[in-house]
Length: 70
Image (cartoon, rainbow, N blue to C red):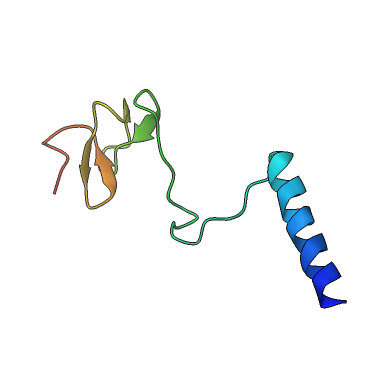
């Protein structure tokens, strides 16, 4: 009985993964996202939008220039 349960569980997991399902990751925060270089982010101080590539990141916040950084 338990052997059947284990076999069905393994088969279910394999089918789920084969069809493109993804298991949730435990290590990362749900709010943490990877941004592309050309994604626009808002400056914390002056609220203008700049690309991630051009922005300055201090303490997890985005700034458009040195004048806006604390």
